Image (cartoon, rainbow, N blue to C red; front, top):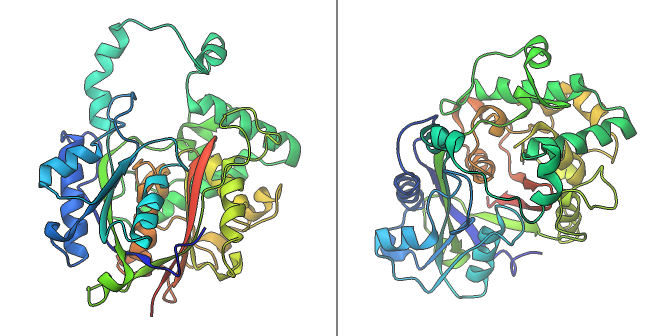
Length: 394
């Protein structure tokens, strides 16, 4: 899918304070990120006529929903022509893609899109209650998982990883190279949560969570918010930042919305999204200058490497062995900010933010060399996913 001759562009982005247990509410963080994004775009809130967020007011663990679309609309007193939220979409970026479509079709001119989490603070303050609270009867998919102790995505994704290892010979050492690369990049990011150097012994020696996933294969709960302004191209003329256009997006889902019912359990929904994205563009994986790939668990990043065509199916282990290729100075830098594994879990939007600052040359010490112009972003894992190709206008 493309957006009507690139009529929708990203004109600005912003992030709130980021950290572990910083003691601020999700709404407070969302408002700060929104203010920074609108200012970065060179706009005022009087210009904003649309709002989009993910996932909306859904039941979730503490801190997962930092703020809703209406929370932010009301806080700023916005008069909107279009708004949306929801989680039955193509991963965390789904409502942002909806915003781009709304702009491209004339339903809005400047849409504020945001995602806020405050899981680190909320889960810490709520831990005592969780330990003493009453456990409700499992329902839905949980009826098939909870009796076997599979309560966490770490359990489910661990089984996916085991199958890939069995079929293709992937090793923990190969995955560890990807994790160590994220930590090395995070050391250059002043907002990253974990920046201390990591060795392969550190990685392999960390406690196991759910085989083959260890502690450092799991992302870091954090507090923070990220926001973007999606603008109609003609309305972005004269604004301070070169427009970042959506060359193509991928939002396909060809199989059941399930963690464990795909025909090929060495693939995920990322493969569907990636295939549909490349069908909508003349660009190829070789044209990508920097890749921002979801790593809520390390194995998900490996899946995106395959899904976006950076290696053949089943060859991710060999790709990871070539560490120079995906280092910051390499031919395809992956997650220059450190990803969620080291920079912190902002649940998807952090990857798009990093793509934007890289394309605008605003990444500081972690800036990818050679003036990157095309970024690939893949977000989500398991049953739903979305991806995009962004390019910077000259």
